[in-house]
Structure formats: C-alpha cells, structure tokens
Amino acid sequence: MSSHTQHEQTGGFEPKIVAFVCNWCTYAGADLAGTSRMEYKPNVRIIKLPCTGRIDPLFIIKAFEKGADGVLVSGCHPGDCHYTTGNYHARRRWIAFKNLMDFVGIDSQRLHFSWVSASEAIKWVDLVNNITDEVKKLGPFVEYKSLGDRQ
Amino acid sequence: MGMAQRKVIYTPFPQAVPNIPVIDAANCPKIQKDKCGACASVSDPRCIDFKQQDTVITEDIGAIIVATGYQLMPNERFGEYGYGKIKDVISGLQFERLASASGPTGGEIRRPSDGKTPKNVVFIQCVGSRDEKKGVSYCSKICCMYTAKHTMLYKHKVHDGQSYVFYMDIRAGGKRYEEFVRRAIEHDGAMYLRGRVSRVYERDGKVIVQGADTLSGNQVEIEADMVVLATAIVSREGADTMAQKLGIGYDKYKFYNEYHPKLKPVETVTAGIFLAGTCVGPMDIPESVSMGSAAASKVLALFSNDQMAREPITANVNRTTCNGCWDCLVACPYSAIEEDAVKNRQGIVLKMLAKVNEGVCQGCGVCVAACRSKSIDLRGYTDEQVYAALAAF
Ligand code: FES
Image (tube, rainbow over all chains, first blue to last red; front, side):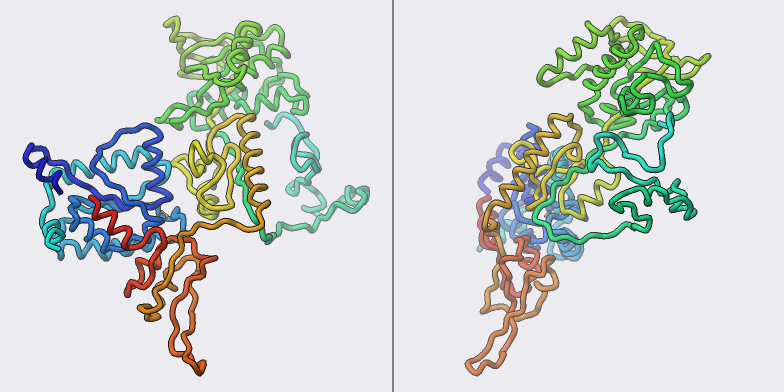
C-alpha cells in the first residue's frame, strides 16, 4: 500500500499482481524458472495452493481488496491435474465467476487464467511479463483497495 | 532391416528380456491355416499353446517404475537425406544391427542395397536434434558417442574403409568420453567435418553427400557407399496418454517430469510412481542404469517401512455448521467424503453430516471451495491462512 504512494510520487507505477497457483504444475514451473536462472518482472506475488480446485472465488475479491492491481490464476493443463479433476472444477467456477466481474466493477483485463505446466518455465516468465505490462497500462486499481482499507 | 530371413519362431535378439522365443502369428501356418503345428509336438514340457490370447491381468501393486524408453524420430521427415528413398541411407540403430554379430550379416558391414562392403561411409549427426524448425530443440545426447563408436567398429571391420562424420559440435562430456572420440579420430582415422549436410542423392550406385565444412570454409561432396543418420531421440508414441493414466507430468516433448530436476530425479509428483531411463529425456546407458538402480532402491525403501508416511494436509469438516448438502461428496475426486450419522440418545438418526476419511483424502481442497456453508477447511491451506497471506501484501 505504501509502495503505491511512493511509486505514484516518483512517477513510475509498479503493479502488484497476486498469482494463485497450484503446487504441482505452475508452482513447479515457476520454481524451474528460478532453478534455470531465468529473469522475470518482480511484480508477481505467488500464493501456492495444493490445486486450482482449492481456489475460492472470494480469494480473488479479497486480493483486490488487499491492494492487488491484477490477479493471475494458473494451474495444470486440462487432463494433467495432480488430483485428476481439480482444474476442471476451477475452470467451471472461473467461467461462472468471470461473468460476474464486470457486474461487481472489476475490469476483466485485470484477471488472467492460464495453464502452466511444471516444465513450462518460459511460459511462466512470458505470462508474468505480459500481465505486468498489461496491468501497468490499466493503472492502479484503487476502488476495491479503499474498501479493504475501510474495514 | 529386411536384409535377412528369420524363422516363424524366433528370439527377438540375443539379449532380449525375457529371453524366450516368440511365434510370428502373421506367418505361422498353424495359426493362420491350422496346418503344421510340428513345434508343439517336439516341445517338452508343453509350452506352445496356439490358442493363447492377449489377456488383461489385474494385480494389486505397491509401486510403479515407469521405464517406457524412447523411439527415433521418423527419418522420413528429413527428405534431403534420402531416408526411405535411398536404400543405403540407414539409421544409427540399423548400423548397430549391421555391426552386431547376431545381426542379419553376422556382423559383417555390408550395405543393404547390394550387399557390397561399403568403402566410404558418411555419418550425419544431429538429424532432427538441436533443430527447432524441423525437429526438436534439445540435444539427443548419445549420438556423438555412438557415432564415434560406429566409426571405430567400421574401421575395425573394414580396414581399408574411410568414415566421414558431419557434426555441429562434439559433445563428449563424461568420464573418458573425450578421449574416446579422440581415439576415433586419431587412431581409427575418422574424418570429422564440422558442418551440415544439404543434400543426399544417388548417382551411379553411389550415394552422393553434399555438405559444408565450415572450418575450412569449403563445400564438400563425398561419393559414399552408405550413409548413417544419427536420428533424434523422441518420446514414445502414446507417452502422454500413459502419463495421464498414471497422473504424472510431462513436458512439451512428452518426456516425463521428475518431482524435482536436481533433488528428486527418480520420483514423480504421484506417490509410489518412479521414473527410470529415457522416458525422462535422452540419456546414455550408464545414466539409465544408475537411474534404474536409484528407482529400484527407492521402491525398496518404500516397501521396507511397516507404516506409510502420509501428507498431513487433509480436509476436515466443521460439524456444527455442516448442513449435509453433499456438494463436497460430489466434488471429491477420491470418494474421501463419507456420510456420518448424528444420533440422539435413543439411537435415532437426526441428520447426516459429511466426514472426511483421512486415509483416503489427498488434500486437493476441491471440497473446500465447493462448500457453500464454509464448513470444510484444508489443514495447511485454511481460508484464514490464505487471507493472512493476502493481508501481508
Ligand atoms: S494440481 Fe494443478 S490444477 Fe490441480
């Protein structure tokens, strides 16, 4: 939160992006990016969950409330979920949830859903870089943050 | 290779495991036309059964080692090298058979088209490997070494023969590997040319190889008698569907993922499933052997425990708020949710509530997100913990 104000003063806006990732694919992919010494934008904050099926849509709203400018959800490719079907649940939930986003005032461009497997370190790097750029263009997301601050 | 004939009953190759003969059903007169059957009367004890069919065997097992191996990239993809069109263009594996004492020529190097001894042999490395456009981006790792070996084998069998090797880089990393390649060049006279081959075609019974020697900056044309392609290693066909059945991960080339590339190289993310050999990626024999040994010892370590350690991450139900809607039961991929009766003192069932069987629960948390009354939480990943992590930003 304080970093927002700092950056706004210095002119450059650095978005905060919360990534909800599953332990078995995307987290491992991000880990591989690290062990392979790849570089990507530091704007992403990872929250590891066992599976994308664990992701409660409320987490995403909560993330915006707590100051996120963008949210990324990523897990195993369809058919590859460690728990066989968790990502299908996530995908179904996502389709229903995404349509509600406009209604509650969240620009759907701030939300991203992707599949990144444990071997796709490069995909992870590109994904984070692209989303950071995209959210940067949209500017800070303050509407929900002020809700969170009021609490 | 279509160079020799074999009997209808044969052992696939001398080192086959298990080392027992098989019947070529498509050509066996007894199976096809119900004639002959002489083999059954001479074999003792009665080990030939013509009626045997494929059967599905169900077995309870405690661990799986996946060692499904590799296959070669279809050489036909590389039209410029003439494979499939020119008889004397063969793959490295075929050369291996040709040089083998149990091979179709009894170990004599003779070319497939007319059986003559080839005096000039060109080996082309990196066919499909390190070539993202036409093949795969990775290095197949074993070709540098086996090509060097082939040039030696060739020289030892055809003393007045000359071998040429077109290579991109010589990757001889490994104990005594570099020395081995030097020996092929210095002692056995293999001519190494750094550069790619652009075209292979036939002219007057010769196979003409056109290529570049980038070290001297010259175009070269070699009148060869035989060409051997060091074709890329690729994953087995169907490797992806196999992985999905087993619940293990794979990369874009369909090689299987280790749990961790450095620290858990033979484990997979699925407990009880281990990996060995080239199903993980290109590797040579010593590496495959050590991986196989490692996987076997991991399995033995697993089996030597009286009790199995399990992850403590399981779901648990808050019985005061659960209203028995069974959304969790429908969502759970492991059938770990059970119906638990709440009874009064008289033993009359008042209601049914969800209960997690902790021995079966794998801790994916799908039920947690599915629960409308927020009555299930996942140990280690509770809602509270996630919100706390979010609040820390
Ligand atoms: S474990 Fe990765 S999506 Fe389910």
